[in-house]
Amino acid sequence: MTNATRRKLLYAFMMVQASFVCLAGIATAVGAEWRIGLAGVCITPEKPVWLYGYAGKDRFRPFEGVLDDIYARAIAIRGEGGEPAVLITADLCVLREPEETALCKVIMRKTNLTRRQILLNWSHTHSGPMIGTSDLNRYPVPEGDLNEIKSYTEVLWNKLADVTAAALADMKPASLSWGVGQADFVKNRRLFAQDGRYRGMGPNADRYVDSKVPVLRIDDADGRLRGVVFGCACHAVTLGNKNNRLSGDYPSFARQYVERQYTGVQTLFVQGCGADANPDPRATSDQVQVVRRQGHALGAEVCRVMAGDLRPIRGPLRTEFARVALPMKPVPPREQLEQLAKGAFWKSHNARRILQAQQRGEPIPTHYQAPLALWQFGEDLTLVAISGEVVSDYVPLAAKATGVDRLWVAGYSNQVFGYLPSAKVVEEGGYESLGLVSAHIGWFSAEAQDILLAEIRKMSQKVRGESPP
Image (cartoon, rainbow, N blue to C red; front, side):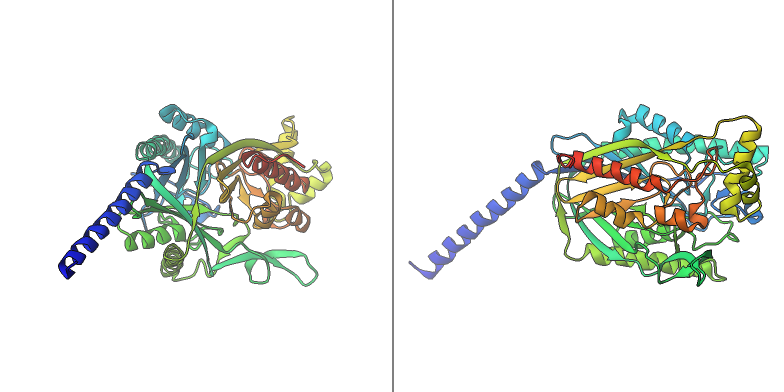
């Protein structure tokens, strides 16, 4: 056999091998385990409305300019043979119970999804627009400004429904992979005196905070990056109450950073259990530079994780949704309520409202129906989505309740009714023990923690096919 013949045979063998590789790639694409769709929409109000997040008089007027546009994003996920589920994220501070109900009705009517297939998460920016009418008892909004808020809210509902439908229509073969980074600017904000009593807010490096940065990468069937979902458990308050420009705060600048590195990629930010966490520094004289710097640092960490060794996430996807009856503290005697009403805001807010309700002869609720969602990705990842402003204690508590290694715990999900304290925070007191705000009244009891964890455990066992002990 001549050398030329050998070279021809070797070339033919290599071509056959390459064709097998290509065919394998085609087979993988056709039989891809995931089908994923991504969509986004700008939700910057066309006309200025009141910002939401801070209650000071500096904010008692419509916003004055736009620091950065705000967005809503949606990711639709369907495993092989399963039903789709959609995560919708937005640069909004909170959504109360009436607004959550109204929004989901619009989404379900537009898409035919059930409530269990919808997961909402709010970035908790304190420089985003006021939504709906649930907080009018806290803000003296003039009628003209209120009409603008109502008009914007109606437009917003339709945009969120449309972006959900667009994500469902965009579903294509894709793969998921997972990694975790770290956010160094996240600090616990609960300060204590030497005798152990709560004394206010400020950076506390000695107290636990969830500083992890979960990263979920989405690649197309050819291995090209399509999108990323990432999170951080920290109040979006780098911009203080003197800022009156519309902004998504640090989460927005983190997304922008990632999107500049990867042109055409969709990014979604998920707020974690950061009720007791603030960025450090914040509300400084150079806060615009600081918020950009923090956002860029978070975005760079997301990019670093995506470029590293990620774990594949397989299906199927199973979802659960429930409303959990969380108990409130018993109503104190009137004399005690009157004393609490004279104290710090976290004591007086509900004390005053309970006294007013009693004067009107209204019953005081004993429980609050709090939304809870859980998404299980095969045996590879568990996403627990808790409603309310959730303190960081719930991250290790949820890990213990589920017993899983790869866990993503999100707060500020579906609706934000006020603060959800752990039993520890209830005992300590302080701002994060504030409880319900808006139209609902009361403080959560310490028992609320165990009831919520029991439901998380039950959901986790159900989606993983385990029998309760």
